[in-house]
Length: 559
Image 1: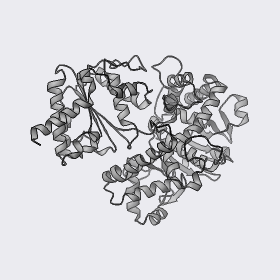
Image 2: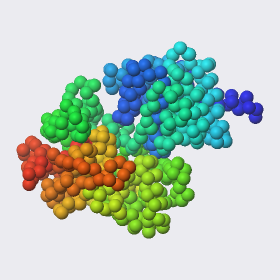
Image 3: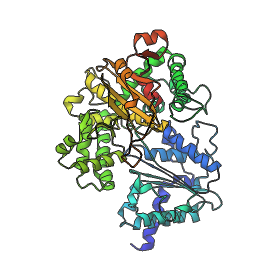
Image 4: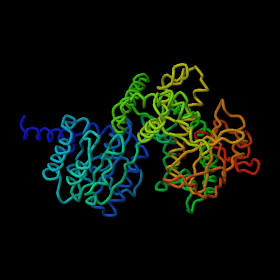
């Protein structure tokens, strides 16, 4: 095959993947417009619109996530939202960029599903630049902004030279969107010619769909939650939509920074959300939906058969561990990533000694640290460390996808949870492990909203504070009270002393001099005390401490 013909193959392949150039119907776009987008999508769309309004000439927006997480779906939804020929449901009238782009101004290339993986390392990016040049010179109007969408950029194995080549291919009137499975290949802002791009966004992680997104997304939504309630919850998150926005107020108020919204406003908004904005039947539906979420997690697959969905979820995760994550972290024995993930499943949220993990895996402590760092970068397994820094040698491991907890646990542990349908078999202990893991994952998301980043834990004289968010002295402690582990939680929360916290300055071992304060202690529970419902107030006092009870579903809702 000649060099010319080989280049033509790549161009022909691009034309095949961009049906909208000829204005033919696109089944893939039609499919995604029928799905309610997750909140991550709207954040991307809003950010792009803001850059457009600020006249940013060029933009590189990158997202990453595990194999099968939904990155391609988000890209197709973005294309559908931008195209002037596609009817896309708008969430906000303030986003002007929706339905504003001519079809011939958008280039989409799924690199993993194209010819690029057949090329020698370094040659793939050259082929890509030829296709981009063809698009810019022969397809798109030179006067208008162009949009280049590159899915699975990790296929190209970009080094710094290849990244520079890619930047050179993007002219000054191009917005580029890149996806990958890990962040490193997407980091283009540190190469020598990065200044040619006006704005960089990301790499931004794409996580399994969180609880509130599953309630709003058609095809995932629990049957207990009607579309009217789903629409109400969507409005609760945004000030851009009509009506109250209590969830937005809660998230703003929990931020440990100076703001017009305080933590007391956040707690008041929680009360209003529970007692005023949601009726008894709606609260019951959300409670049932939260338990359903523990079984299904945030996975969206087309097959309706649970066994097939399980196989897809597990095979995607193992492919991610053995191929992508091991390659990213230069892990010579990727089976060890699998083994640590299985430990996180079987010992979900339990305190573990690093030496025990090291002995079980058969490698030294330093290698275990490297494994855990790689797993965290891939948002597969995350650690929780001691708030008081008294146990440097111990950690708690959490899988970030609840379905992985089921699929990597031993059968005697997860009986009754083999598929995501309700069964007559009860297994309260395993449901508690799921609830604990899901709450940690959502606490990590809340930490992102509140700019606290880490989720820690600590042991008090009366029990465990499961999740602690802390930033600049403001402390948000959460105790999990979920059957069958519900005893003594009020005393545990009240006995928490925020002054036990010890945190080092970034990049050093020197302790920071911080005045810690926890205005409220939060109790996440699957069953509210009778006094709370009778008083119509989620807040009560215990030994001088303000305790705020959060129904489990309500905690997931605000994260």
